[in-house]
Length: 307
Image (cartoon, rainbow, N blue to C red; front, side, top):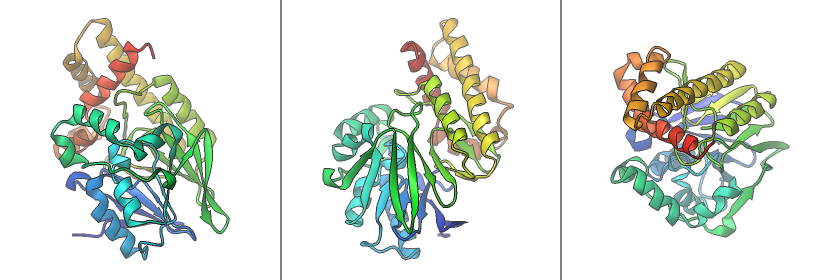
C-alpha cells in the first residue's frame, strides 16, 4: 500500500487515515515539533494506519506528547481511546463539552448506532474510553504547548457541533478547521456543507467562520480533506454554500415537504455548483462521508428547534 503520509512543510505531515478503506476523505495531521502532536486521530478502524504512519515518522510509543480532536464525531475522534493506550504519555485535548464522552463513550456510541446501524462497525468501529486523568478540556480558548516556543491555540467554533474547536499553529499560521467550514474536495476544489443533526446551527456556524477569518490564518487544513491556501475565498464560499442549503431546506419545509423531497430539492439546486457531481465515483465516496440526507436532516432539525 502506498504511504499515507504527505509532508506539508513546517514539520507538519498529513496522514490519510483511510476511513473504512477509502483514500482521501479523512486526514489526521502530525506536528513533528519538540513536543509532537497528533491532530485528529480518525476512526477506531484507522488506528493501524495512523500507528504505522507515526512509526514511519519516528514517533514511538513514548514520543507522542499530545492528541487533539477538533470535535468528538467518530470520523475524527473514534480512535482516541486506542491511540491513548498505544501512546501512554500523550495528553488528550478536547473541548469541555466533549470531554465526558471520551471518558465514557457509551451514550455517544448508542446514539451513533441509532443513526448508522450495522454500518457503524464498517465506517468507524468502537470508541474506547480514555482514562479521565489523561484528558484536558479547553473552553472558549486554550493553548497546547508544542515545545520550542511553538503552540497550538484552540478557538471554540460551534455550529457544526457544540464541542468543536479550531486550532491555530503559532509557527506556520495553519488553521485546523475540523468540520466547521464543511468539506473541501481537493480533486475538484468544491466546498460543501457538513450539517448533521443534532447540533447544526446556521448562525453559530457563520459566526465561527467569521472568527476563523478574523484569526488571519495562512492556510486551512481540512479534516476532509487536506491543505487549502485560498483562505478568505474558501471561508466565504463555505458560508455561501451553507446559506443555499439552508434556504432550500427552508423552502421545502414551508411547502410541508418530507425529508426525501427536501433532499431532492437540494440536489437539484446544487447539481451545477459542484464539479464533483460530474464524477460519480468521487461523488459516491463523499456521500459515504457526509451524505446529503444526513445534512438535510440536520438542517431540518435545526429549523424545527427554531435555530
